[in-house]
Length: 100
Image (cartoon, rainbow, N blue to C red; front, side, top):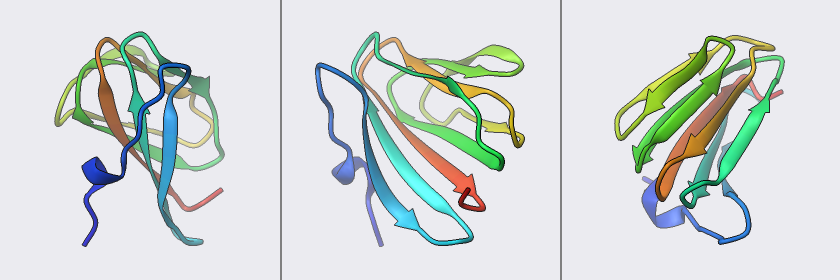
């Protein structure tokens, strides 16, 4: 068992990522963002699930901005832009499947 909240780190300069799992079938990454930090929208050729564990902000997807809060998640399709902007200290778990 793993606890993503114990793995997360923060930096005042930029979002911090930690790789929690990496296999050909799936990659799992935890993001630590301070208020105002952003994972700019970007694309990958696979599906991505973004799930907020703590904090709040907005998901940035091809559908526009959607509220991000504990328990909220967004799933993006291959090559659909995705990102997150934190309104407060935020922890997000991203599941990328399969690994690009």
